[in-house]
Length: 204
Image (cartoon, rainbow, N blue to C red):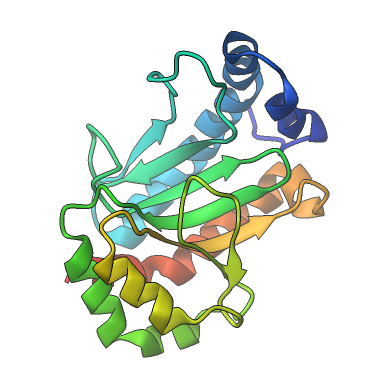
């Protein structure tokens, strides 16, 4: 089955009340699309990273009361998990789609990665100025690369144990690329291709 993009109804799943009810919507409508996206991306991501990559789809298994406000797929070079590794994400909030290269607080070598980035800040100048940066994967807020104080953000990433750093793009549900499967896959690949130098730098 071919990926056909996301519809407004997919984003509206996050307005459904109740954990079981919202999870049912996520499992029925969003996760199959995540599997299709992952199937399209894995070979490319393995080729451009130079290592075997694996698809992980968020299960939200630890939740017992509150329904998730967002959901995502992750692609990482580890078969068993992704949170302790640099990884690529595609996911949805109720009002946006995100495409991230994610470095979250569970990384065991977070300070080393942050130092690598601080030592090579000129690499960020090669990225589009409208790329977004998030400092907390639990929040939808993000600033553009041209507007954020990058050195301050990376210094915080280095110094603060719970600090995170995610870079990529956020799109609106109404963006035509979001609603066209082939165009969205190509857009995601383009974003990831541009972020590969940072992914590699994280492993130096």
